[in-house]
Length: 315
Ligand code: NDP
Image 1 (tube, helix red, strand yellow):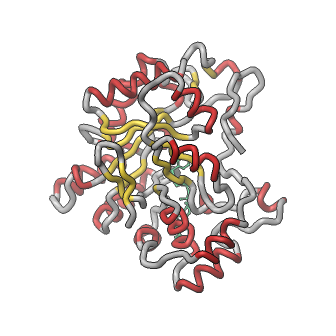
Image 2 (cartoon, helix red, strand yellow):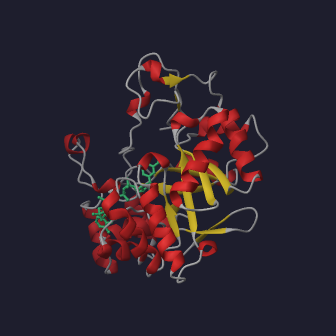
Image 3 (cartoon, rainbow, N blue to C red):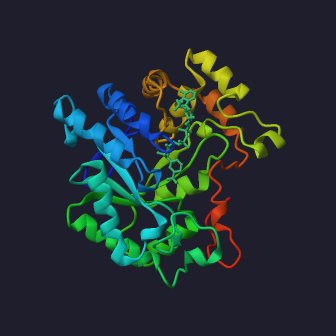
């Protein structure tokens, strides 16, 4: 499997396990299955509401000695209601407590958007903090402090467009080490990838299987789900792989991280086994033609009248 390299020489396995929407009653087992079957990279977030259950899996697996903490890579993310400078490190410490870890390998600002501290999810414009009330540079400087304190090894961002990255980079000498964004054949984001590559920013692809979904807008556009897409299925047949494996391989072959979510033992194992073949030039050309800029995670909740969030997306 490919590794993503960081400036200090650390490496992250390209394929990791996602945990969004993994139910509390299933996620402990899913993470244990993953770690006991070769996954070395787990993607978490405070807002997924299941970090304590993921933490149970870590402590059980470490206890039986088969997997060591230093051999795995754990990512988590700062939720949008903890951007104020006094809230960043306490939020990180809560995540560490829940995950039963002393440090994270990677901590990300989940979105370039801030909510008031008591707001889990916004319902009205007043639930947001403006860029003046919670300047992203102040949040970032706390992330840097967390790194200096050894609470995290690497820091980065998520859901940052080129504009948002430029805004942040104009204010700091410490470029984010990662940008985790939605990436799959229906949303290829080539310009963002090029920008990140030029600036030494690693990229991780989220919702690589299209969140296993076929939303109404996709039905209206008469587009099949990613997993049912005929081109993906044709390429899968050619390589003797599953459609999911083609989508994961496509991300890995582009040089990004990729974090498919599953709580199903068979699919957890299948997804890790996406590396035993190579997509060929004609496969890649056909997949390139599937891009129709479709977002599963639309961030529509940020488009409330009266809030000041612009340039969330590039395309
Ligand atoms: P994915 O694209 O990973 O799709 C997950 C869905 O596909 C689930 O329904 C899963 O069901 C199913 N599935 C998994 N493997 C296969 C397979 N081989 N064949 C067929 N179906 C399969 O969706 P997510 O949106 O969850 O994205 C992945 C991860 O990315 C998240 O879990 C999270 O960690 C991260 N993420 C980050 C975001 C951010 O803002 N930074 C936003 C969204 C996601 P089952 O469990 O039953 O197998």
